[in-house]
Length: 124
Ligand code: FES
Image (tube, rainbow, N blue to C red; front, top):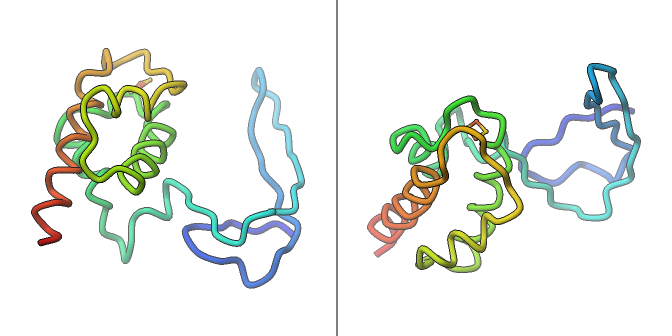
């Protein structure tokens, strides 16, 4: 059974098929999810409204070609969940391992800091 999971809990732990390409050739991998809650880039948006991290990336120029964007935003989401007021160094560390060939990282780090600031304002 192939299943697309956005944020949420699959109705049951069923076999999932992941598709990707390697050197232009389609590959698939079948996995049994070990976790019951999966977060995906697409799942961050709720009811057709972008998550504030996604908005901040757009507004700060943190997304250019977009190849790195899902990984950057999911890493940033995890970071802000653990650390709502990260320093620049914590943002750099939290996003390390994700490579961006376009932005030079400055706009990405600014986007994460901006999203954190907006979350603080929205949560009194
Ligand atoms: S926006 Fe192109 S690789 Fe990051």
